[in-house]
Length: 130
Image 1 (cartoon, rainbow, N blue to C red):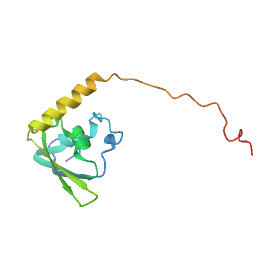
Image 2: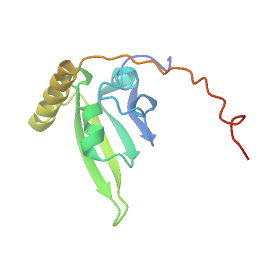
Image 3: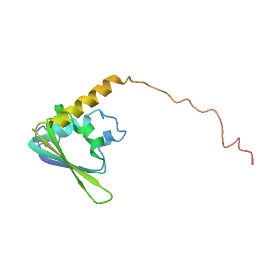
Image 4: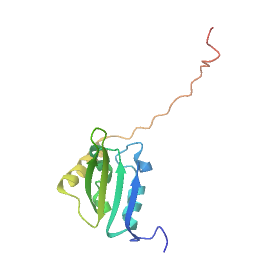
């Protein structure tokens, strides 16, 4: 059985950040989440433990294309951490479907702007007068 085969795992876990989520781009390009969804068996669960609050993280997980439901829990008294349980083969809640629509419409409204940083020509260290 290859690790990347479809419908291979009943459970996957992750703590910290999914690398594609680090820039906090709402689409995250989806590669990691698509792969997770693909290798989970129907009824399988992806469990994520992170400090990312639901108003940030659910924007990344709430996609009907992944075919999973999202449940989240929080733990801790003054410094919270969050547990997300995504179950393959279940539908998103109506609230999560609305969140997906909102995020996708915001992405359509924002033009893609590419900027380049100019190389600085100043030699600060050699221009310091002591």
